[in-house]
Length: 254
Image (cartoon, rainbow, N blue to C red; front, side, top):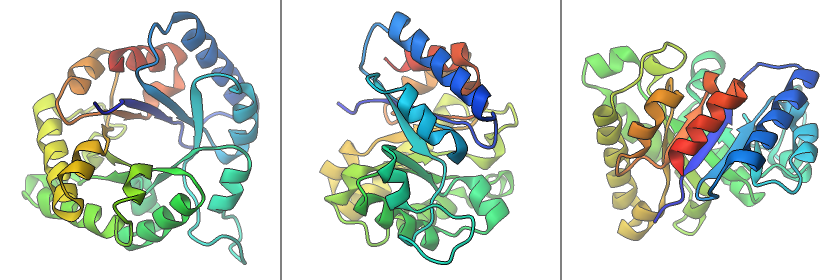
């Protein structure tokens, strides 16, 4: 039985004070109202808020992750953060390959593979994102696009290392648009991703790998999405910025 994950990607939102307030509110609601620890909870605030978020969540069942990282451990890479740096402050997860990183910053799946390897080498769990644009879906090219992203993004990752990888399927056309893939559409792609992993690593690894859905997940659609056989939780954007909405989505996963 795969343990579900609900991860909140805050993107470039919330200053330090606002971040601390939201973390405190989420922690309080989870502590007081969550009846089961069946789901893993992760929040991914900005780099600015990582240290204080980790401190505020000490002793809770909420993990903290970064939204991105550089593949090198150190060096002359102005403005970048490395896996050893993220790991040194107590963060446990990192998002890699988000469509916004691909679209606005030119990230490729090959670069993502290097980042994923570096993250795993520093004991971080990777939330590796894949997904197609609306044009790719409408031209029926999404199967090829997703397969390529999965294969190239996991290049050099061993079967043993796959235990530190979570795949997040995020159709680009559903991110921040209010549009959501139907539960059937999402399930179809999640099952397809699992077959790709099976071909590469075998059935045991494929069945153990968790695959999240991301793309306008809200409290009112989370339960139906998470009930699908191959959907193991969600990578949540806008709804993660509202403590009550985020908590309701967590409840849908337990």
